[in-house]
Image (cartoon, rainbow, N blue to C red; front, side, top):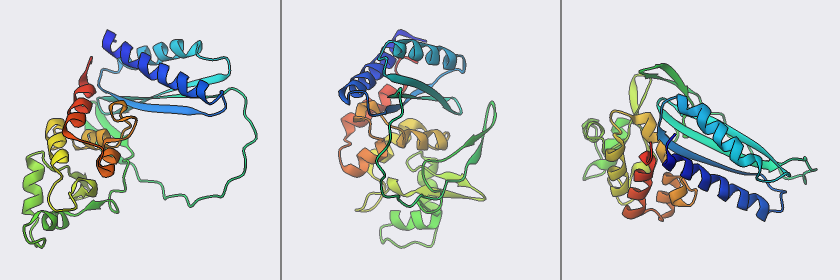
Length: 238
């Protein structure tokens, strides 16, 4: 594990501890961050390092470190929660969304089961629908346009069953692919690593104040400078 990675983990711990103590130790706080591509040997090192740093955070806190992998991409979720469980105030129950179905992704290390952060049908377009949104007239019976952009890594597409699905967040309401999406997808290599690209768009990012890039895009707070900083941070120190 590099010094840059350790420094980044230190910032995560410091931020969580500050948030936990700011709540007087009564609110659970959690943060998930992508650390980019890393060998599996890093998993144990990172977990041990974080637990050691968190052990002195507060006697009122329970610490939890969860390592997640999406192929070669490593993510970590760190949680601080009150050591003693208190009686919660009843709240109105909300409808629970149907669980998303996992997909099996082939990797160099073998098949990998991954649960997408979006519904692969409700939150995506077919190739024909995507081509229609990209055409000048807004109407197209061809799938060609979407597949051309997919092969250029400008448009993220996910192989589902015997076809491709195009996540809807990528499209500018005014028409076409959002310029920031196209820029990010090309840097991430969306054509060769579509699932890793999808994961990056929907993971909390500390450069974006713990918003996901997709959420920041939808909120209008993502600009070219922030985007490049978040992408640079993906591989920093790894």
